[in-house]
Image (tube, rainbow, N blue to C red; front, side, top):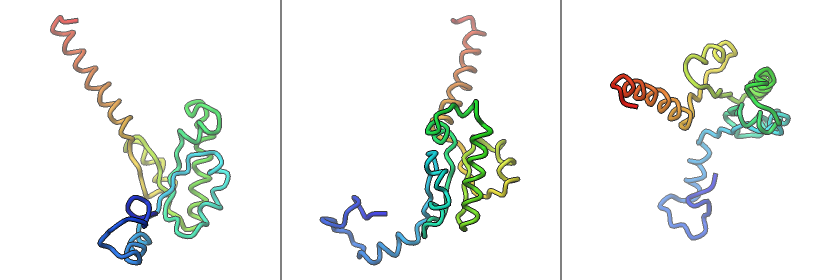
Length: 145
């Protein structure tokens, strides 16, 4: 994790470099495991000192694996469990990616205790579909088309 503007040269910050290094060392370091290659090398990734948490990215994993996630959920879930198990083995906390609270029980049953819920584009898209649909229904009821 670099310093302001990712370089020390030319920066005039009020914090001394060693103070910043100390602060940065206390930062939680979370890494996205999105590519097939990352899943294939998850033990090596989780064994790097300083990795605090990992999060599996199911959509990007499927894309980098060359298949549609919706048609291969069993493969995605298997890879996700592999990532979680490697994390626990190396003392790294796994975090899941889910769409909403309804998905939580599956992860709680696996032993997951850290959650990333929703993605801003999906949240907005769902809101617009729901609210836009309600508005369209209301407009149709008034006789407008």
